[in-house]
Structures are given as C-alpha cells and as structure tokens.
Image 1 (cartoon, rainbow, N blue to C red):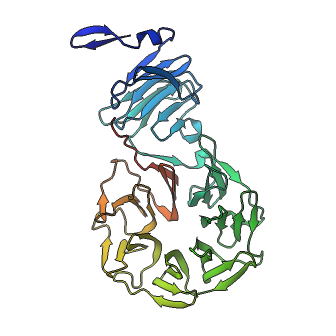
Image 2 (image 1 turned 180 degrees about the horizontal axis):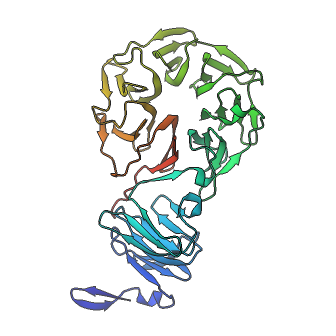
Image 3 (image 1 turned 30 degrees about the vertical axis):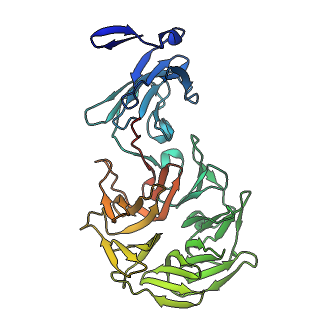
Length: 425
C-alpha cells in the first residue's frame, strides 16, 4: 500500500502488517487522522496508532463496499444487507427493518449527505442523513401505536407496550412478543410501563388489569372484576405506588394488594414534587396532593383549564406539557412562568412526553415530531436534520437507554442517538 504525500509516493508505514491480507476495499477515515479501514475476505480491519486489528467480529457476511457519511458513521455493504456503524452501536439493515437481505455491492454518499446503496436484485436504496431508526411492524410489533417504553426485567433489554401487546427488544436481535396470561383483549392494550426501585416492571392497561413482572413471571396485581383504565404510575421517594386512572388518583399497597382512592379527578400524568407532595395532571389543570390527603389546584399562569399530558421536574422548574397550550415552564421558587409553543418554534402545541437526557438536554415529544430544548435558557435547539419525522408521539412513552432516546409514536418506535455527531479526534 502506497500513499501520496507532497507529490511523492511513499510506502505506507504499516505495509508489512497487511501483506498477508487480501484487501478488497480501503477507506481513509475523514474524521480520525491516521485511521484506515480495510475490507478483506476475513472481515474488517482498522489501522490506527501503528497497530492494525480485526474489528466488528459480529459482521460475518462477506464485505463488499464501504463509505463514510457526513457524521463520520461507517456504512458497509455485505452479502446480506448493510451495516451502519457509529461510536454507540452497530445496526444491521436487512429485510427485518425494511431493507433487503440481498447483496449490497456499492455505497455512495452524495453532496447532500444522502447514502445510496446499490443491491444485486433489489434495486437502489437511498438513506437520508437522519439520526434515528424506526422499529415498526417489520420487526414484529403487531401494532404501530407504541404507547409505552421501559427497561426490561433482564439487563440490556427494552420492553415496548403497544395496542397489539407487549414486546421485548434485545440488542441485535429480533423483537419478540411477551405472553400476557389473560384472555381479556384489553390486557393486550398497553397504556404504560414503569420500572420501580426493586427492578420490577409494571404494566398498566385500559381495563385488562394492572400487572407486575418480577424478573421471572408476569402476575396480575388487581382482581379480574376490576375494569379500571390505568393511565400512569410513579413510585415516590417513600416507596408508595401512585396510579392515575379514569376513577381518579389511587395509591396501591403491594403487600395487601389494596387500593386507596385519593382524588376523584380523571388522571393523566403524575410527578413527585417533594416528599409527601405529588402533582396530578388532569383534564382541568394541575393539582397538588399533600400528605396523601389535601388536594389543591395549582394556580399557575397558563395552566388553568388546560389538559396536562406530561410533566418533568428540572432543578427549580417544573415543565408541564399540555394538550393545547404547548409547554408551560414554572419556576417553583419564584412562581414565574414561561411558555413555549408553535409561535416560539415548537413543532406542535400538543406535548405528549418529556425527558431530560444524560447530557442535560430536554426532549419534547409533540403531535408533529420531536423537539429538543436547551434548559440553560429554555430555548429550542434547531433540528439536526431537514428530514425530521412529522409524527405524533404518544403520552409519556419516552426512555433513555445508554446513548439512545426511545420514543413511542403512532408509527412505531423511533430511536434517536443522543449525540449522533461523533467528536473529532
């Protein structure tokens, strides 16, 4: 292998180490100086810092083509689909997620950072430069309406609740159905999933029961003659289970399996404000429950009469996602409020889910896509791509898992990279 430097061809310093390899393709990494990728019949090799090593042993198909997109991610065409390699993950694009199992012979990046993939027998594919992947029926989810996402009872797994049942996802494996031991069709319409501090996974349905998975089996916690719609759940710092339902706000004693009705208001979201203080989001504003008894409306500018769909506590602020008025940001200490809506640049005034990621960025799932907010001054971060999905998000169906944010929508689950742009080294 030779390299051209200052008008002269010189032997590459690691030439001796690759002489035993049959190199079919080469890529010089544009973001990492001195890093070179090699495709061989024996697999993928990477040379860097005077060393060359075989990498990504999970890619066992013959590698035919390699390209790097505008974000620095690597695309590899193989004899069975294509692989997308980022610093955080390796994704196999094949027939299970809408691509093809056929040979990918050629990969090309155009000036707009679209990736074009030429196949043998399946035509030409284009991948626009998005930072998300969608999981839908092609991965085995019966219903595209994914209402709930949570960490699974086994390490590294993610459970998805849809209007077609309960599903488990494990890295690089096909999504599988989780059997719910019930004949009631409402048991397969999942409203929420929730992880408590003992790593139990709770499942709420609209009339098909309240269920708990203890890591070994799924067990119904209420009785068969209960037909309550469970909308949301939290476990407070004292270990009390709170449930938001169509019969009001309830607490649940796990040992006695008894419910106590705290309020009669139709419940949406729940949030712990402080010890012995719970905020209940309703169709008529937000209410404060103190010491499991006293109920008072929160008289916050912009919330009166609004339908509260989700809430998030961030430092000295509470963010309220509403059904009509966008996002209302309340300073707990001063009482001051700030509103963000479509006039401010939000995708929609219908706010269904809120999440603070590990980098401190606030994710907002709306009726027309996903926004991100910088909490330093609560300003909207411009979209990462012109191809952001115009999709309706579902209520409180949001989860961060490692470096990805999972969001349940009416078109499946969208998985975004928290930091899809790798840092230059």
